[in-house]
Structure formats: C-alpha cells, structure tokens
Amino acid sequence: MGRVAGSYGVRGWIKVERPEAGLAECGEWWIGGEPRAVEETKQHSGTLLAKLAGVGSREAAMKLRGVAVSVSRAALPEPEAGHYYLADLIGLEVVNEQGEKLGVVRRFITNGAQDVMELSGDRERLLPWIPTVVKKVDLQKKQVEVEWGADW
Image (cartoon, rainbow, N blue to C red; front, side, top):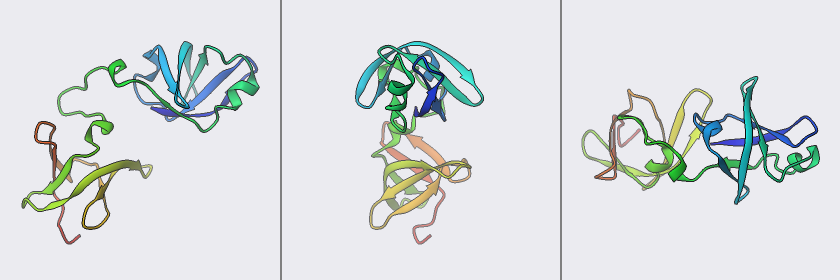
C-alpha cells in the first residue's frame, strides 16, 4: 500500500511514498510485521503523512524508513467490477488467446509507466498490465487471458 519514506517534523509523523488509494481511511496499518493504530493522516505534496500510535519522535519515525506499509485484506473495500487488487492475482495461471500457457503470476512490479506482471513458468516473462495486453481476468477459474505470443 506504500513505503515509509522518512519522518516529517519532530513529533513522530511519517511520510508514506506512493500511497495506494484508501490507505488514509484505514485505521490500522501493518508496518514491519506489526500492527500500528493510525491516529491521524493528511496529504502533503504527493505523499501521505501519518501519525501512528507509539511513534512519538523524529528518531522513532526514522527507524521505520524504507519499511513497507500494508493493511489487512479485510480492511479494504471490494474492488469495482473489472478492477482487482494485484495481490489477488498472484498465483493465477496466464494463458494467451490461443490457449497456450505462459506461466503463473509471480509478482507485480512497476516501471514508472504501468504495472508489470512477472510470470514464472518454462521461462520468466514480464508482461505489461495494460488493456491491450490483458484481455480477461477470471478469478473463479484462477486465470488471466492475455494477447501475447508464446514465443515473445
């Protein structure tokens, strides 16, 4: 959902870079494998500022620098039709429109322009997560259909 970029001020506020939508509304975040109550949040210059329970100084906030921020799946709203949480796609089989198996979604990375699926299978593949490539997601069948050649 984001990553702690550092501290903000001297009272223990943290800056979260690249925060996902909805993070500010969650009352509890997991940081470094521990749940932390969120006391207050506010937007500031493309980052999300947060005051966490138990983090009362600049030094304590700086200790969290670089740590991933996550929330429990139950805290997130259900995605709209045609939208997905990328974490829900990990492990799905990826096939092309010809029915050829390309691999399994291992993880997602970003290249600054879009998200990219990393597949594991007979070889590693990187596929952009864009509408011209991703044609259909079927969570029931645990499958993603793409327009992508097996030899690409």
